[in-house]
Length: 406
Image 1 (cartoon, rainbow, N blue to C red):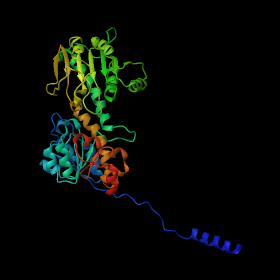
Image 2: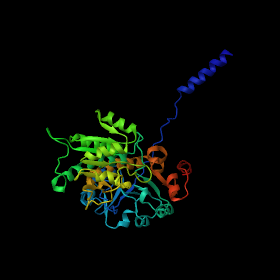
Image 3: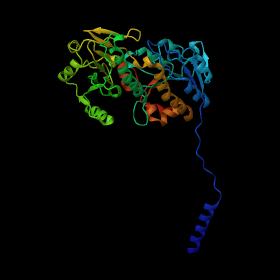
Image 4: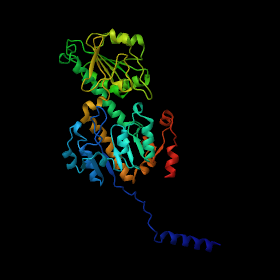
């Protein structure tokens, strides 16, 4: 019996020492992408989805980038900048929509969808408040895989594009307020912030999300006195902790808000809601009691506004007066600084596009990247987002089931 055991051990040892077939990890098949960057046609949209530096990065990785002529003009990027980076400039709009991946800032128009041959990937904002049922039906009919960049999450569970645009809007709102406080813009003749011996500018910020946080940082940096309102105690506590200073904060009590508005030089509305219209927290009566020549910047105007006196204005004609108060109510503030905003967008989009190529296509990235998957609302022509389907009364299927099928 012992001799048999010894024989078995010897055979096992011999098997271990014998040459073995090397087991190597199967590499992912890199896919060469064709990426189309059309010129934005939406009202007041001045951003471009990719800047020339990012185009150069993609081209260096073996991808083809097709850019419609003058796509970057409003952000002060010339066709020459893109061609030098390796992009192919096209002069017919239809040509750019033949690309495998269409990358846009604003949602596509019906005319743009009509130019798409189908079975492509569309990456753009979704802006549900202005969408139509017919738009989704057109995309479904063309078997489009659609990704909303405002729904994409990163590894920290943050919406990176939304946060980047929020940072820009918060910082820019303070610069806008500073401009319209000055004499040259019809304001009170105040310098935003203050100097030694002069009372600092009083700023009220309503909303403590990303926009409110960066508006607060910018205002404090210029020396202003800031009062921050939000009904979310966690947000107020987080901003105080991040800033490392004791900040005047309050929940949105009408009496407290009214008292703060009575002495404010600048009021910034930065309330954001996940669905529907922002609440009107500042009544016309509150506005009428503010100091003459004060400035309101209603960043919430994208979702209807949080001031009863607000109405949409444009970049060309940005302000109006109501009860002697200057109102700035331009949607899409980020387009006011389109070059900076384009860099911010491009810094996020370029790595995503590289990942699509490295993963071997959009389907593989959807399977392996949960943050990117969160942005997918249509997969090969099937709606996968239940809230969208419910809102527009359209059929849908869970994305996880579709991934298994493809």
